[in-house]
Image (cartoon, rainbow over all chains, first blue to last red; front, side, top):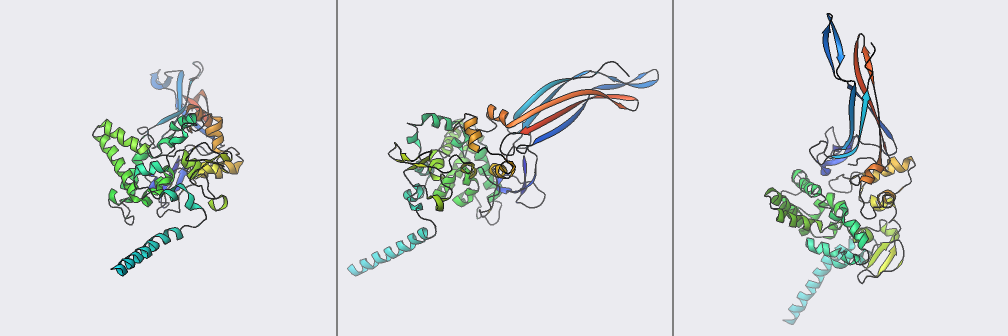
Length: 98
Length: 324
């Protein structure tokens, strides 16, 4: 989304079209280009005492990851949000090993 | 007694010349006097403006096209889903009324020129109206918002319908805005419809069919779906910038398709020109790929498993998504 510069001066974003005359940045997708995003999601764990040592136990070995691409015309989920794409995938990790 | 009458008549004639001549003298170009607005004179009411560009006679032969258009935002260009009408109002409250040199202290001070920041694209024909129409539009938006606050559905619906009567209809694209280089190609005339060929047109009001040089070109859409700030205005505004993005980021990189190719032809939407709200358009516009895997991250002696999610998004449209 192009972030408009208020009256084309300074570092403030404009409020409505009537104040837009410049651009601070564009967070949208440029035509013909591929934009990559990488996310890391920790599996749920708990640190427990075992034989006098603190050991990290994995509480789940499978996660369901849901990725959604939203268009937020007003920059938040309260005003006319639009779900553009979504994908649900399962991510598994091994249960054995040390 | 007779002499006095003659003098008054002469004075009236001279005054009329003084009033009329500057209006004609201020506009350059040959042939603009034959346009719809020049022939009819400026509209004094919203109803007169709607009537000036009344496209209802098109429906008889072009019903399917009309029905497609009726589903589009063009059919409610100053209202949309209410968002556009509300933005017209905030442009007055937060903009015009706050700016010390706009001359607007309240809705009653609003002139056509004040609204052209919005209307340049949302209602270009407002330029063919008197200031009374600008004030009537503002009053109608106020009536719509008041009715919503008071939960008066009937009154809100009535005001919304009145606002929707002014829109980007057949005659705006196929006559009024059908020629951009008017000194090169001539001004659109009353009675002409611009399309894909020359000839006769079976319509009493519009008997002449003219071949448009730009109806299939992106610039036809670009005159509203804009370049960026409209610096020609006394107080520039910027809304849609798709055409600017199309030129500098798509065409400049080798893109060759036109607005009409994607929004009308490939999409099979015709005059129901949609963007992301149409499922097919949204899907075609952005490739969305997600890859994921998990592993045990080792922080010295502690294993902290994590999932890695890689998302790649490729914009297949001819402009930035989303647009401002």
